[in-house]
Length: 491
Image 1 (cartoon, rainbow, N blue to C red):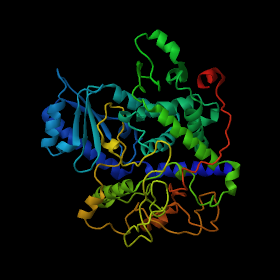
Image 2 (tube, rainbow, N blue to C red):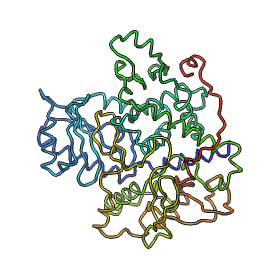
Image 3 (tube, rainbow, N blue to C red):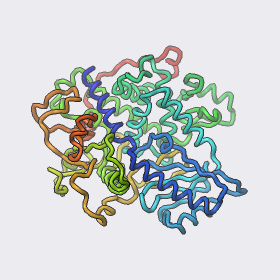
Image 4 (tube, rainbow, N blue to C red):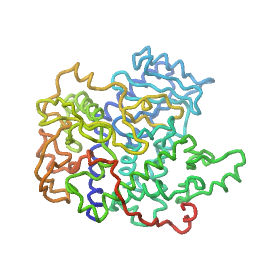
């Protein structure tokens, strides 16, 4: 089990390196912020615009939205005034902007016309900025937290369970759940930077997919973290009934962060599914499985979609170092090698996929893996209006960037981060799997233009296009080990 858990640990590290924001992605998003800020300043010169949410904390996926808050003096929030100005300045169009004036936190939701980045704009809401500072503090306290959270965000995203509007778990709620998991973990070394990420991910899925009592228990991270009995909380708050996923806001204890996550039982089912799959993949019996040395363990539950890869290619082309006359980046200059396109059940489709001249076989991957509550990433709900500012619109951009690529020149065969397929005979020496004695290796490799750099950087040793994730097998249950003082609340 140790061998396969170490492989999973390395795959999580590689996934984090690959999906972490690149310099050109941050540059593009700052351009969106500046463009919107100019419109706001034209209307109200004394207004202050601040960024919060995942963009400010660095915990955003390539298609996450940008959260902005505008501070100023108004008797009535100028939602419609700003909406009209944004359309008039061609920041967005009438089909890509919505005003949610009846929401708990009134916001404007829009999609930037040029970049397809989604933006949420609120007014005079201070907690968002404070929450971003809180998240940064916990990132320093628990060094492994960002890697764990990014994997979990991708897991929920591709199953349409990351939107509060559809009853899923928003980014802030997910982060607080991860913090609570780290605080109350029964192993002290779990908070160490050298802890095994694979084991932590499986134990997170085990806790919130199997052991946590959502009916009776709430989450509190203040004062070192603890579990809260909902019954006791309700006695002291007669007018409020705790929600199914009760998470006490550390910045405002009277606020239940998870109150809108009415689909939390679906989330729990997905977590339980992931626990079974991963626990089975790292069990001692895994060494007898066919192709166990070439198949990705993490790829059984998450993967990167074709649209996201195309979108990042386009960003690199337009905002990358070459367009800015800057030195090439080394940190994320990797290419994702995947299998031929798969259908929703992870079976090979019959249609041929046309590839660019530089691609040895077909390029791009397909929809998310089949699992309980799973659905393709590019879904209507990802672009649907949200009723809460806690939601992160992490779905695929509204328009496929392929349309924009067709209008420009063809992508150069040396473009970094292109999604290719290749057959290789051996694994990278950085992976523990040894030599491949047959079959296809699935991995992230450096792109052709920076092969010598890729040898110095850790590449994605296993692709996220793993074996069929709906094959759960008979994973061995592990007896939950909880802290004694919180054991009653988690049973």
